[in-house]
Image (cartoon, rainbow, N blue to C red; front, side, top):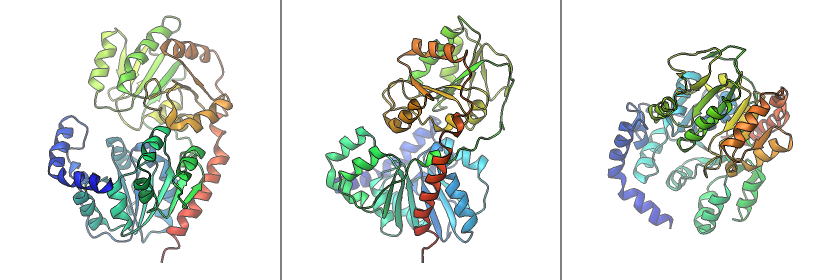
Length: 410
């Protein structure tokens, strides 16, 4: 099966540049740096590379404690971060400035592209984050570097898929010297494949519990608000309807934070078509008492919102996507609401629900009722400390494993 996949990804190589150019025109790729996804780089001849491969912004934030630690302790080493999304690229440019840390878009999983990328960077340690399982990338990288799968996550849906390809999956996973699982579910799923390189440590996204002071926007204290975080386009109409429902009883400011920004103009039109006041954060970053929707059309603003807006609905949970990670708003003491589709982060949501820090809502009407109820209550100010000790333990245990591969590497 892998040979068939490898052959297919090899023969489509000539079409991939056309594919990326098409995505550039759709504002889904960086027009100046899309070539990096073809394995090219503006950097050459860099030695002693420790490579962290992530998918998106959330994963970069989750590993920042490790990146900063190794950037300080191993100054002779160079830290490479590869990611897929535009948001991760913008975060790196705005928030990371160390001279020995580099960012590049991840290469597409074609043998020609992967080989070009690896021949240029020659990483000696390769650390894949979360569920970034790319067969060609893993296979090629394992031939020249030690491999770690950090914060490994496999959903029930993925497990069912890989069960049908048990031997292929086993051959891929055994290329990692260590697999550090983020939850018991993943650990048990991987045990099914008879892997011997497993450790259950916990979710590294729980490590970074430090709140950040507002940097980009100003929200006045008298604003009564709630936030809709990481909202997928298919959920936008429901969020707009929730705003209309709650404003029949009480004047609210709704912060709408889309998961992706490529359809901002369409979202803006949807809001205006409902005769709702709307303010784009890129045009006005000062929020006073505002009866309408604040549309967050820039990346890196969510932390500022959570400093003030303590009721948060997590997107991707009204549709069968599996929900988005609630850890970020939780560290600011927010009360979490979500739909029924949370299978991407079942263990985290279960932990929060047991402690009264999150609650499932069935539909938009149920969400509106909960927002109105919570607006009359004092949100738990100590919620941000709920996982601090757990995060400290996870950082210590994870660092010990990484040290074995990095600090003690000959």
